[in-house]
Every structure is written in C-alpha cells, then in structure tokens.
Image (tube, rainbow, N blue to C red; front, side, top):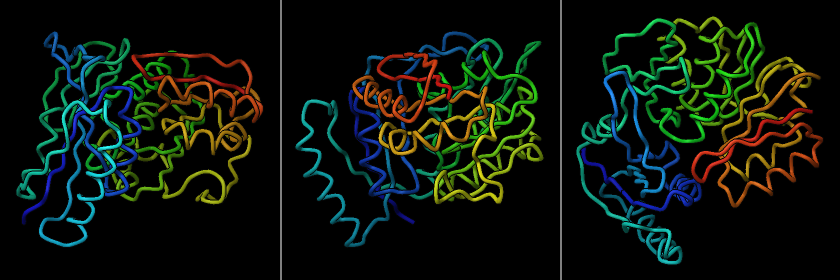
Length: 304
C-alpha cells in the first residue's frame, strides 16, 4: 500500500508550532527528528540544538482529501516564511517503509546520571546503577530526543522520591510514566486524549514490567477525567509535557491535582511563550516557581 510522506525542516524555536499545525492533517502523530552525533558507545549523544529540525507526517496516497490537505498546507506554509529551512516535500513510500523509517533516528540515549533510553530494536549492555527504559513509541510522542522530554526526565531523577504518587498528563509513549515507575514511584496514573498514546504507554509499561504500577486511560484533566476518583489533591508530582496553549488552559487543573506538598513539572514551552505560561500558573495559584532551559525550550517546576 502506498502512502505519502510529507517532510519539512524548520528552525528549533518553530518546532512546537509546526508540529501542532501538522497534527491537524495527521492526528496519529508527527515524527520530530533533531540532528545529533553519537559521542560514545555507552549511548551518549550530542544534540545540535541550533540546527534545523525535520518533521514528517504520513497521509493516504491517491485520494482527494489528501490532495486538498496538501494544497491547503502549502498555502499556510508560505505565510510562515523565515522559520522554514527546507520547504515541504512530498514523496510516495510503501507503508512498511514509512512505518519503520523513523527508527533509524532513535538511538540508545543516556539522560541525566542513571536513565538510559533504549529502543526495543537496539542492543545495550547496562552499567551498574543504570535505569534502562525500553521504548517503542509507535506513533506516540516521546522518544527522549526532544529537549522537553529530557528536561522532565532529569527533574524526575533529581526530585522524585520513592513511593511518590504520579500523574502524567499527555503521556504520549509513556516514557515519563515508565521512568517514574522504574525510579520507584508508588503509583502512576497516565492519561492522553490520543488512543495511540494510550496503547503505546500500556505496551511500554508491560515491556518494562511495570504495568501493575501504571493505570493508563484515554482522557485528560477537567471534564475529560477518566478515573472514578477525582484528581483534586491526589498527587505528589504532576508531569505535564504538553504545549504552551494547553498548559495555559489547564493551569488551574494541573495545580489542583497536587497535594499540599506536591510539585508539577510543566514543559513543552518555547522561550517566547514562557511568560504567558508563568502568568497563567501564577494566576491559578502557583508558588515557588523554578525555571529550567535547554536551547529554546523551557520547563517550569511549580507548587501550589
């Protein structure tokens, strides 16, 4: 079966906005490929934080809705101008090709001191003390190669206490939920509005033998909350690697889910949107706000 692969390269600060745009046409997900070099045989990599990032989506070939979508997308991209490094390309590929092509960009990666992210199709010999997270993200976001995910993982390693209760909002591949469980979380609730993400999280939890520690449901905070027990005041730690728009919309719900000593790791924020997210969180009652940065991306650590 033939499929159309659409690819574009953009400047790092435009990745979030471009990914959001592409998801309108391919809800199943966007491949985000940040260039990097392998620097050792232990899984170390050096990311090129200032180089163009390539994004890809796949659409059905040979139907009128796809042709109309591509034409509409081209018109929108013309208006974006300078943030586009390489213009949109459209190529026909076989379904099996595109389903696996992105895997060549996903390598064993060390994050922080102990966390090692290992794709399920690669080999790695653990060192003493390693927390090895085996991943197959499928079509869900979360390989650990994006700055926002790495910052969340580093904060988990630094701050999470054994036995903590965790809420992962927008769990994607389940990378944060699984890592939290492997680091010793007491229980993890993971939610996502994307069915592919729910499936990927459950599969990755099973592959890492932590399925009994992670409840995964289709949903979100607010009216989309899927569990019987309300989230208010339940969690020691809330993980929200989302987007600036969603963070602003959910600011109050994210904070309300924390217990009185809890903290939220809020990321998916580009530099120019940082202050608007800070304002929304402060207005919702945040305090003790700390900031982390990697390249153009930001992570906020907030408490009620």
